[in-house]
Length: 302
Ligand SMILES: [Mg+2]
Image 1: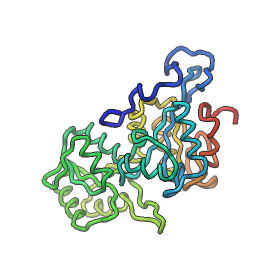
Image 2: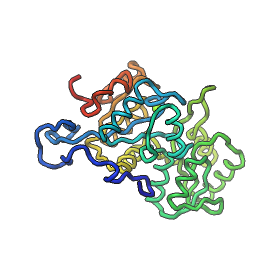
Image 3: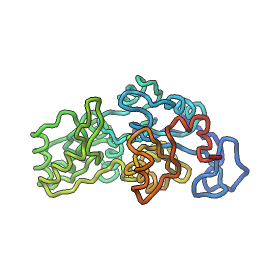
Image 4: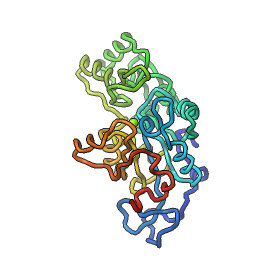
């Protein structure tokens, strides 16, 4: 893995030699026809949400460990995509491992990493005033940003469990003085064992109200988040699917990034709630356990 988390080819050899755009061959054993390229046989790559798909809080969802083990055993390219900007990939790996899910750091993509990539692409070696915890602070440091409250290029809002009126006041004044307002994710609330917690979207609304400036949200449903995740594992949209538990974030972000989408019923969505949206996932499953044994050809023979 290089410094921005990209998985190198040597670490992740493709299971099949047939590349997108190459002449069609007969179906290879490990491959399947990809979404929009008739006749072209490529292996699927997987993007997947974390909470409500792989885990509930700190407990693995049934079948998740077997699913990850199958992807790993078959060299299937995958990455976990989470809006949670609180933790670094190393911290998240440790938490997932405690739940029995063995996922390497470089296969975890957070809204904090996506925000750092975005800011780096917009303004390399810039400066930011950050409200957030280790996830977003580490990501910005590693991408070469200076964290300061003196005339920063950006105010970056992530999530924190210790909101400070003083820090929010500083953020508001810096935005009024011209700093650009960027937030890791638009979620209004996040889960906890005791009940919901206010998340980045709720505090962003407070700062927006005080400044009149609307933040740019990098996390889902922004398809930018999916595109940066694809790039992190060297995957292509036409042969990648996104698994999520929410229509309004996971499915729409996958759809708008050109991916196939799978909605699971182990989180927010219910079969009834799907009908409230003007778009549909490619496939609806009860849980990720339904993919075990068929990860090479998830849409075949149903
Ligand atoms: Mg979720």
